[in-house]
Length: 118
Image (cartoon, rainbow, N blue to C red; front, side):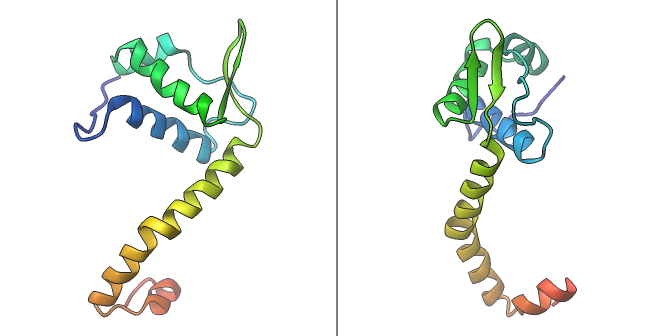
């Protein structure tokens, strides 16, 4: 599998974000095993240490758990925690900029939300 990486962001971070998206989208369910470090490294043609670093961040964030001899699994409640974090991040980081841009373009937010057209 060939994957194009963004040179501006470390690969381990992009991989971490990809796993987060898979959890949020329901592709990886709570209690389910995540693909092995070796398999991901082969699939994406990246160093296994890069995959390990990405997975370790998710373990540190309490989203994945290590099960000795079995591998890594999505923790119970991970999706709900991620949804809350993503909502907070959107409202504090993205929404103010989006709202300001809409105002600069004189777009009516309520009309956009109801009709999809300003």
